[in-house]
View 1: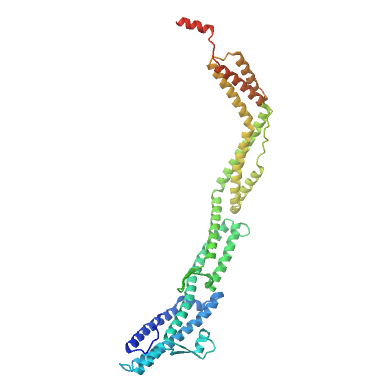
View 2 (view 1 turned 45 degrees about the horizontal axis):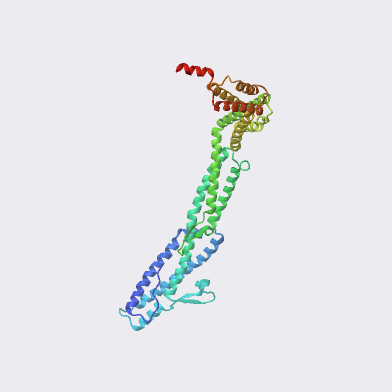
Length: 436
């Protein structure tokens, strides 16, 4: 929709003809725009919808604006027709004709009744006068605001309800799947989430249909009609929530498929933990009998709570309560691994004194072999020290602290002999003379 040229002095014939050509093109553009607005799908939807909120308020105003647009257009059409009639009276317009045409084309020559313009052009006036330029500007304003309202509502209706319906269909499939694995409201958190999402989507769709403008985010700095995008914040949030529920249900389905295998693994892990604890208890008795003056940690009994929970898990599987079995299995698997680790640590702590005794025995025998390689195996002092250490290490109960000191004394004695200069014996000297 265009704008006429500025008013000026008396127009000549060429100026009049050019102005009429512009006005004719402008009239055609305005008419095309108004007809397009009249046939716009968004306008037809707005006329038939039960609106609420901001949309109801703006549509009431837009309807007045659209009615006023047609009234202005009719007045504009009449004025243009009148100007064309004057110009067509004669081939060469007289000065009187040119004066009349100048006033008509550039002056405030278009009068619209106040009952038609109403509050849009000022209340209380019987009529309102416009220039053709002013009338076009006024129609442009009304057209832009009306089109913006229609395009915005149509954009929201075209985007959100269809997406909500698709999400609602996915929600119904998810609800049926959840019900098949025992995920129901009041029995599983995911069931409660599905119930909440259902109510939210139902309410959201009703609000979008009745008040689409409440779900529109206008683009900053944009003045074009429909500049912005639908507000999908609530929809996106519920879509993410539904995806989370779907993953939870998939986990439950996975549990249903491999529950027996996971239960077998759990029994195996707990059985190994029980055997390790039993071995630790036996080892503790052995340590207390064989090692003296040593604090041996107490070994706990079997994990009865975990065995009870394992029995509960098996019961859930038998009754197909997959939604309860899923979190219980995850918890049990971690606890069973922790229990096996604790049992192994307990066995290591209990058998530590025996390991220390074995290390001392190995060290003692290693030094004895080293001494023998250097020909000192028959040294009386070393034999005495070795026998003393050996008696302590191979007697029960063994005092590890005393035995360690005995081993250290033997090591030091052996080290002193191995590093001391050796005096040749009489037999060695005779052998050397015979070789010479």
